[in-house]
Amino acid sequence: MSIDKDTVKRVARLARLSVTEEEAESLKGELNSILNWVEMLNEVDVDGVAPMTSVVTQEMKKRDDVVTDGNYANLVVSNAPASEENYFMVPKVIE
Amino acid sequence: MTDLTSLTIAEAREGLAKKEFTATELTTSYIKAIDGADQLNAYVTKTPEKALEMAKASDERLAKGEARPLEGIPLGIKDLYCTKGVGAYACSHILDGFKPEYESTVSQNLWDDGAVMLGKLAMDEFAMGSTTETSYFGPVKNPWRAEGETIDRVPGGSSGGSAAAVAARICAGATASDTGGSIRQPAAFTGTVGIKPTYGRCSRWGMIAFASSLDQAGPIARTVRDAAIMLKSMASVDPKDTTSVDLPVPDYEAALTGNVKGMRIGIPKEYRVDGMPEEVEANWQQGIDWLKAAGAEIVDISLPMTKYALPAYYIVAPAEASSNLARYDGVKYGLRVNGNDIVDMYEKTRAAGFGSEVKRRILIGTYVLSAGYYDAYYLRAQKIRSLIKQDFDKAFQTVDTILTPATPSAAFELNKEITDPVEMYLNDIFTVTVNMAGLPGISVPSGKNGQGLPMGLQLIGKAFDEETLFRTAGVLEEAAGILEAPAKWW
Image (cartoon, rainbow over all chains, first blue to last red; front, side, top):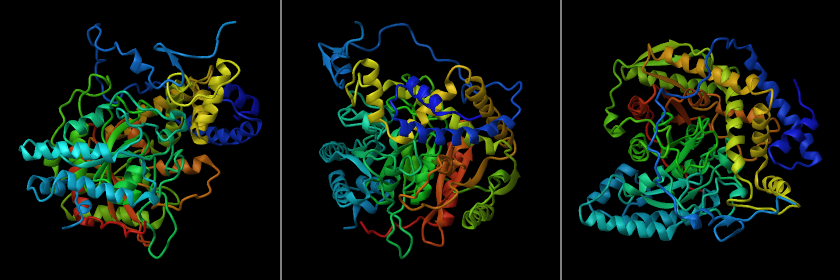
């Protein structure tokens, strides 16, 4: 199975990455090379095999549903490229 | 006085305890050595003032007889760890100017044990690479060169800055991280010791995520003992990371008994890959002979799923990376490139901020997780992980540890033209199975090749049996002899 340039552009759109025509072209080759290589996984019979979900069996840790942290909105936004009064600033999203 | 940077962590600890020198003197020696090693490009951020401040506090503790396990030991921290008030970029342009407001659990554990921070060490961007050439801050040079040559070589990756800095004596030890071999491969390329502990042994809290089901913290150090000292401090049970496992951290140094008599060492036939260089094969045989001479029993074993580990990894890791890296959107931290609207801003920011290897992996990950492909790729790869784990479970019914080469070659030249990404991925062929199964693995220097470049062997252990790895690695280190420092050319 191989992917074409339009698929590369569609996937790039899903990943929110703008790619130029030339980049899409060279990525097409690189991605196909990787996808062809991983095709060998189809040789393996995985019928009845459970997917690995954790390395050691451990019961999911739970904690009491109480506030343990917070009250520092100023620190949360301190690295933002644009912020105002402890809000993240983004371009207008509704008309 | 001897050059203080020549001391191992164990030796420096002893010298400080005996008051032969102060933590400030030790730290000052390293700061000078770092400033003289700019050519290597191992440090992304230097923190000499912070280091001297921490060293001063250590000297006060030492004077009062209140030394902690790593009191006054100067360390480098991989750029992937969040360090409060000190830049953490994962060597990516997209994290431009990011200064975390919090400290990672692993680095906090080190400071709580008295260690001194020298600065942040270079890595492949987001830990994606095997050469440290994908760092936004430029490639790192391996302090080792082939005999009679002046050609620069890669230090391996992704923890190439950590490995190069330890080998060049510009830190006493360093933190690193390993998703597919990022501790063990650079350790092998630089004649240093690197251990990736069992998944869940170290907290991932405050480590910049690459592939969350594979990422694990570990140290790179000059000797097996130093690695044991560091891991003891780095590891902990952490409520902030639900995958950290509730087991007490043993005293790894106590495991260094030098005794492997009667231990059963597995030799997996599937690691004799086609086209393996003769020097790698010979070095492996040498390791087998050393352990045999020390009284261990050698057992041939089979790990039939080995060849599927690398392709399965290149589904699982990019899939998880594409999800983890979705957070870099130009809103919360780092780089922003303005656009016509918010989606345009996202796309432009991410296009400008990520390097080509990172983009490649995000796209592969997005593709294999996209509608209609999840079962064929990600789910199948996760099933194959179960089979890889079963191979190891079976092998460990008859052996205590497994010996393999660490890498398919010694350090290669910088700027090697590789057009096929798959060719570069093959660097991880011996290390990646361990991450897929979540097991611990250690890379230990095992002599030099014909060109005078360091080589390394890998030991793989049972889950949470790092002690056997340290003990066996200690025996290999003793037999191989601790490597001298690389000849200084920088």
